[in-house]
Length: 503
Ligand code: NAD
Image (tube, rainbow, N blue to C red; front, top):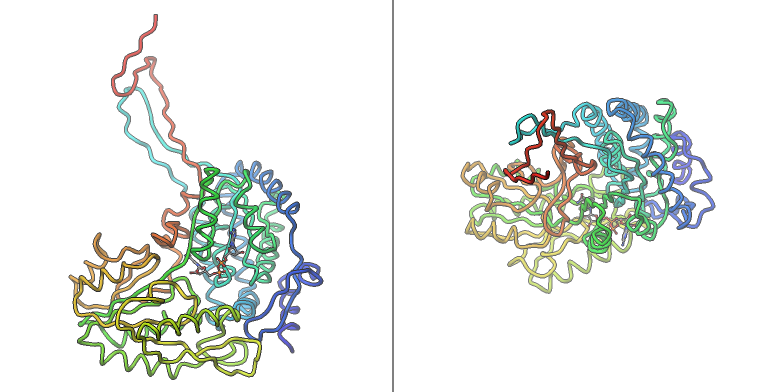
C-alpha cells in the first residue's frame, strides 16, 4: 500500500469526507517520502468571515450552557480520541514525520487535556474578597469570552489545537482553527472526531468548533476580525511579530506561543548517564522539530571531556529513517526549506569556529524526503547561529568554567521557552530556579527541556511571546473576569472614605 492509499483508508476510518482532501488547490505532502498525499479544498475570505459569524452565533448559545455540561462534551471528545488513538497517531506520523511513539504520544496529550478540562469544568472558581465597606460583598466571576481563534504550527499538528479547544469549550467559548498548511489532514481528522462527540452530545450549537483550511491569509483574517476575542497563535517568532501588533491594535487578546532556543547546563556533580539520555532525547527527538528542543548546552570543563565524546558517539549511532518503515529514532525534516535552513546554520557555525559532528543528509531511498543525521557542534563561544532558533536537530555545545557566566549566557538569547540544569548540587539547582536563574517559562532540574506534561502552564517569556496554555490556571486567559460588589445594607458608603452627599 502506498502512503497515499494508507492516508485514504485512515481518513475514511476517521470519518473525513473525501471532498475535503481531493481536487482542492492546496497540495499536501508527507515528509516521510516527499510524495503528495492530498489536494486540500481551501476556504476563501468569504468562507472565513461566514465561519466566524457562525461561531459568534454558537458562542451566544454555548455560554449559557452550565460549565459542567460543557465539560460533558469534552469528556465525549476524549472518549472518541481514545477509540481512534492509533489511527490519528498514525496520521500524525505520516503528515508530520513523527516516530510512532511520538505520534501516539501527541494524541495521548489530547486525551490528557480533555480529562483535565472535564475536571476544570467544575472548578472555574472566582474569589470572594474582603471588602472595606460594611454590608457589602465583593467577589469575582468568570464568564465566557467569545470566539477563540487558534493558529497552529506543523510540529504539533493536533495537540496544540486540543490544548486550546478543550479549555476554550469548557470556558464557554466557540473555536475557529487555522492549522498549519503543512499538516491539514490531521486537522480534518480532528474536526471529524470532534463532530462524532458533538453528535453524541446532542444539542451542540452549529459552528461551535470549526476548522478553516488555507495559508497565512486565513490566519490573518482571524487576527483582524472584530468578532474574534482571543487568538492563540503558535508558531515562529516571525509570525508572532506580525500577529501580536495586529491584535493589539484592536485590543484583542492574544496567547503567543513562539520560537524557543532552549538550553541546558551540565554541572560538575551531574549524573552523566541521566544527562546523556535527557540530552539525546531533547536534542535529537522529533528530529529537532519541537519548540522545546534542546539547542544549546553548557558543559562544565571538569566533565566536558567525559560527556561530549559520549554524546558524539550517540549522534553518530542514532538511527535515522522512515517512521513508517523502520524503528528509527529520528524521522524526517518537514521539507526542503527546513533542510536548507539547517545546512545554512551549520555553515555559519563553521564560520564562527564550530566543529561539526553529523548534519549530512541521509539516503533512505526517498529522494523527495529530507532525512539528516543530527548535528552536534562544539562552539568556542555563544555566537552567530547559536543565538537564533534553527528548527532542525543542531545542538551547540559550549564549555564553561564559571556558573554565573553559564547562567548569564544561558539567558543571553531572545527566546525564553524551556531550560534545564543537570546537577546534584542543591545550591546550583535552586539558584537555577530562582529569580536570577533561568529566565524561561519552563525551568527543569535533572530533566530535559522537552516533553512537558499538560498539568503545568506551558509557554515562555521574551521572544517566545509570554503566552500560557494547557494546565494550571491557563484557563483564565479564555475567560472574562468580572469583579462584582453587592450592597446588602441600606446605606451607601463610598470606598476610600469619600463623601459625596447630595440633598
Ligand atoms: P510558522 O510561524 O511558519 O507558522 C505557524 C502558523 O502561523 C501557520 O498556521 C501559518 O499559516 C500561520 N501564520 C504565519 N504567518 C502568519 C501571519 N502573518 N498571520 C497569521 N497567521 C500566520 O511556524 P511553523 O514552521 O509551522 O512551526 C515552527 C515554529 O513554531 C518554530 O519556531 C517553533 O518553535 C514554534 N512553535 C512554538 C510552540 C510553543 O508552544 N511555543 C509550539 C510549537 C511550535
